[in-house]
Image (tube, rainbow, N blue to C red; front, side, top):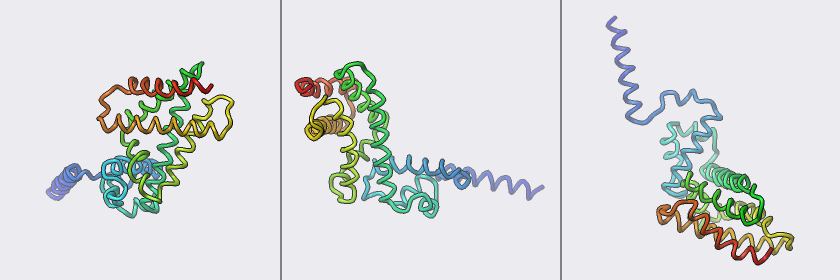
Length: 215
């Protein structure tokens, strides 16, 4: 009876200790797909906070509540993990913009696209650091990845340019991409002080002033 009581007390102490240290007692029992998703979500926050170069796999493993061997079972390297986050985030953003493009006029589709753009980053501010962080601008490893994301957006935006030459439409779409990036950077750096809808309306007014004269 004494041993049973002692065992119960030790188990309770271990549970409290796990709570204090932030460890998950069920970490090893999480299904692989769920664990992979959890690591990706944690890595997004860690990369957003510390940046790519100052983030270690140790830090990601610690915050995800897993060991490094478990982390490396899912991702071969930090580069692979960040590259996947970049591609996934860009894909989710594009899908959000495409889903909003159901309005019946080009002007309304432009406005809806900008609303989807700003609301995406309002809901997921960490995604801003992944898609527009300094790592993409300065690290040769990610320049091609960033270019692929921007090219995908440009192809989508070129559809708003009417029956124009494809190369010309892509050049104009790149301008709209630059407008979006500049405004989202300003908005995020200012602490998202203006509502997302207000920023979207401003961006749409600025973009449409140019687009309208071309279609």
